[in-house]
Image (cartoon, rainbow, N blue to C red; front, top):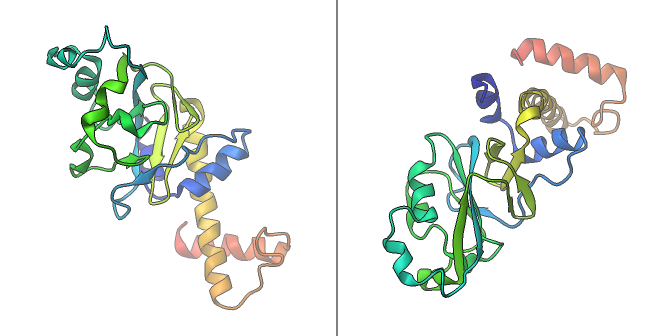
Length: 211
């Protein structure tokens, strides 16, 4: 990932990123129904590294498979590169218990809901770093993943630089609008900036604040 893009994505919200993606025709990039274990952490930003589950078949997925160091679940956890976001397609079923207590380590983690690991054999880890579906979103390895206190959005790698730059501009404008509204200004003509005077005022505000 472009280091400048990484830096930009650390300072923007998933809501703003969804708007920037929508402007490019991408409407389904926000992962559905996941929550951060710790919403007070800074943004999570990294490239997707994926693991895919399928329904377990008893003759192929006995408890003994977990003694194998090459088991896809074990292997994927060890091979996930530094700085990547480990994305697990657990078929929207928390009974996969796909991470256990590991998410309680000090890094950003998002989950559907917790589940006891006794249900682990209902699911079978199969493929590492292939396209997956996660929370109704298609995820390709290398896509840029951003998480904040609200949730997680997936940015296709080929548009990440442009989306990040657009989101920074949008965030600056939203901060300007917030400041004006707090000072008592009406949102009419301000958000969106249909009045030319507000566009001029925003450009002056950006210069004043170095934004």
